[in-house]
Length: 340
Image 1 (tube, rainbow, N blue to C red):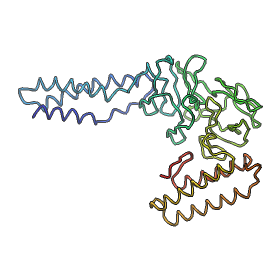
Image 2: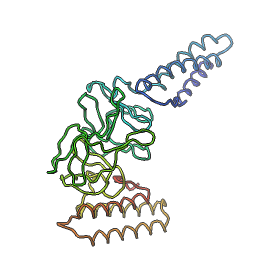
Image 3: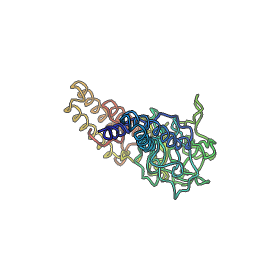
Image 4: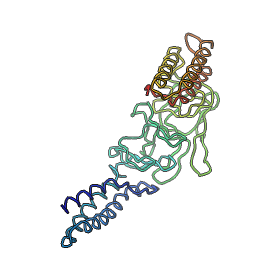
């Protein structure tokens, strides 16, 4: 009975959350495993001694200590360690690269200190939430000149020596709309010309590097679309928008300037609104208001000039921004293809 109680107590201890330690370096994150083992052993010994009978306290303490060490090790450790990490994100969402050989890298630590298998494929938004990009995993990042893996979404990062490398990109477009792949530093001017060496970013009040809005982007056909946007290119030159501002949408999310694509998204929103209305997520007044807004957007888009069934970049950006706003008002987000 006492043994069963001891086992049950140790099993319950696995549910105790890990210590919320601030992760300053990859090594400190790795050392959480050691701390968890020591703390778990001490806790297990106390529990084992307490639940054992009077004559079994020593045995109970030994069993509890061993069991606690195992539990502490499991609670404190990540699935892998720094010897297998591409890198890690700090509390502000900045990437810290490591010098781990590419053949050994198998995952990374996110900003909460949790191990994630594979290389990062996405970005942290302004709200601190992780958004997975629709780009192909093999286009999600690149190796710099020193063999450090860098996410394509990182405009700036810390190298393995802790030095900030600012204003980087996975490649750039030339003035003919051709994608030139390879690590580089620079930014575009208002006409789409690549300015080598320019650092398109700044440090905020906390000293964190923040990418500036860009004056436009190249779409998947290599055409320059002017207008302030925020986002990045994957290693194949596909634009990934990171805000709902006009023009800032994911170019490879099947929302292009083509009339059919916009019509498809409008139809999707119509179904989404009606589905949420039927499910009770929206009141009748909210649903009716959303449908009226969608009808206005449709009329606006249909009255805009089209060339061969396509809007120009500015008009497309206007419609996409209004559809983004409507989607957000009913609890959706761009790129979500579900109807809830």
